[in-house]
Amino acid sequence: MKAVYYHEHGAPEVLQYGELPVPEPGPGQVLVQVGAAAVNPVDRRLRSGELQEYISRTFPVVPGWDMAGRIVKLGEGVSDWQVGDDVMGLAFTWAIQHGSYAEYAPIDVSAITRKPEQFSFEQAAAIPLVSLTAWQSLDEFGNLQPGQSVLIQAGAGGVGSIAIPIAKHLGAKVYTTSRAANFDYVLGLGADVAIDYTVDDYRSVIRSQEPEGVDLVLEALLGEGVAEDAIRLAKTGGAVAYMNNEPPEMADIAERNIKAEFLHHRPDGAMLQNLVALFEQGVLKIPEIDVMPLTEAVAAHHRSESGRTRGKVVLHVQDL
Ligand SMILES: NC(=O)c1ccc[n+]([C@@H]2O[C@H](COP(=O)([O-])OP(=O)(O)OC[C@H]3O[C@@H](n4cnc5c(N)ncnc54)[C@H](OP(=O)(O)O)[C@@H]3O)[C@@H](O)[C@H]2O)c1
Image (cartoon, rainbow, N blue to C red; front, top):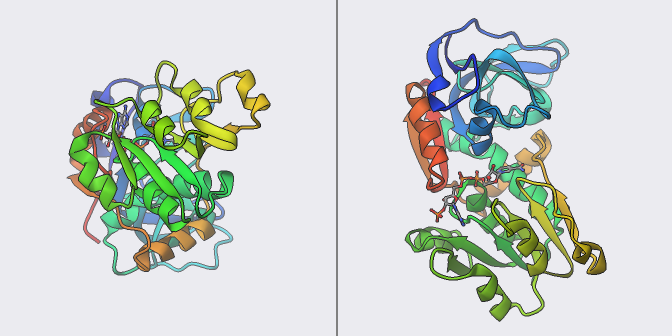
């Protein structure tokens, strides 16, 4: 099969395009003929050699966890799915080898749901990781309620593109950060207040409008003092969901009863099915998608590393 893979960690150029054997589905898995695979920041972090203490590698590694495609083979013990079913899912594993940047990829059936016909494979592949992350942060962890307030950092990114409409669906007031060039996008997603972080200090803007702080911060940024500021911006009894790091050590967290955690997305086919229903009903919008061919995975990783992509970058793998 045609696949993108790497034999060693490094810059995007370690990604090669070539032939690899078709993997076999393990017990409880199906083999998917991949139509499209989304690019996520974690793909490039793993490629560059980060996160080795958490996630092991067997080289050559095919990157990619998000996929949409057609089932072509059932693993042992799989009875609820059939060859020919079109599915989408998050093929997260703690041991990476057979990812979705390839013509065929295995995935646990517990991580998939049916792909609605009305969505293209590219649209379907863009959904799983960011939607599950956003839902698990805002609803499951944050218990965001109508009338509450939330700061969603990096609103124009993949996670922000879904987190903003989910927060609105849950009835919250949404503050988000983006460059002014992306205001039309984040306001179109439903954000109430967009803050151009290149011009204004987002902390001051939020403090001026929410003197007690916000109920929840979805902190997707890294940087000097960012983690501490998220705690300071949360109101007493509020919560901070960190996307990239453990909470900072601050007495303020216990003193003001802030719930703070490093959240890691969890594959969950049933939850994904509920989220897909929200997309089908039009409650959630498919993010803006920049489609690139699988052969351009190096350029796709460079684009992702720029930190400037709006919505999702998705690799078209093959026509199905
Ligand atoms: N823990 C988890 O389970 C999990 C899951 C998904 C993602 N993450 C992490 O969460 C972060 C966001 O993920 P993503 O997929 O949304 O990334 P992404 O799509 O690559 O984010 C790109 C966006 O970030 C915005 N941005 C860049 N610098 C910014 C800044 N200083 N302030 C505000 N916005 C800024 C850019 O918008 P502008 O051009 O408007 O600045 C761009 O649209 C990443 O660090 C990722 O690793 C963690």
